[in-house]
Image (tube, rainbow, N blue to C red; front, side):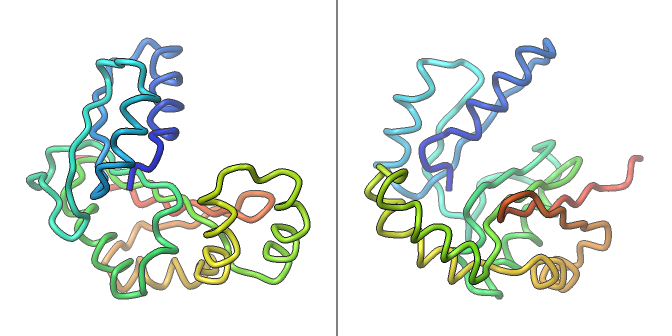
Length: 172
């Protein structure tokens, strides 16, 4: 679910500043999202677009260092989260990093308060409140990761209402 490709742009900027050579595969099932990501990538050689479904990831085990996602998990039911975590971890050489929203009354109230003034994207206006209601709590995401077999999984909370699941593989 690469969406607009914004995460890849940030990673590319970070890698460039650190003088790291990275190749990123931006996956999305939506042709529209891939077209937006392509336009935002500005011809970056570090990003390669691939139309694919997360239910059938087109990567062999251990051929990608890290799988990353942002704002994808809340779109999936618990079984879908478990399957995605299990399959990305299995295919990752080093680990996975998955960032998402945190469900709650405060984030929902805050979104409804600022949305008319600050939210310009029509998708966010339509999907924002629903996404917050569908999101997981940190302890729920950690339980799903453990159910997926990710023994090293940790969930970090970020202000104001975000969280990141990190599961690194042991070195060796």
